[in-house]
Length: 80
Image (tube, rainbow, N blue to C red):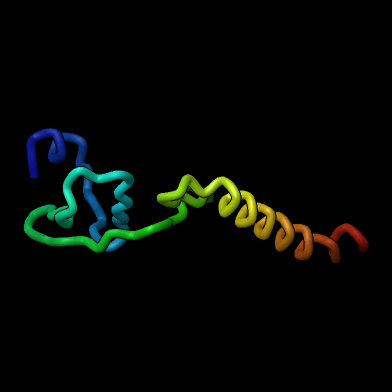
C-alpha cells in the first residue's frame, strides 16, 4: 500500500472490482499486488449499465425494466 492509500484509508475490494477494457493497447490481464482479475464485457455502476459497445439501448432497456418493476410493486398502494 502506498502512502496516499494509507493516509486516506482507501481499501480496494478485489472481489467487487470489475475491469472493462475499451480499445486496449495492452492485452495482458491487470494485476494488483500479484493478483489477476478477469475482464468483463459489461457491469452495472450506480444503477447504470456500462458495456464495451457504449450500451445506450441496453441501458435504456435496463432502466425501463427497473421502472416497470417499481410501478408494478406500487400499483397495490396506489389503488388502495
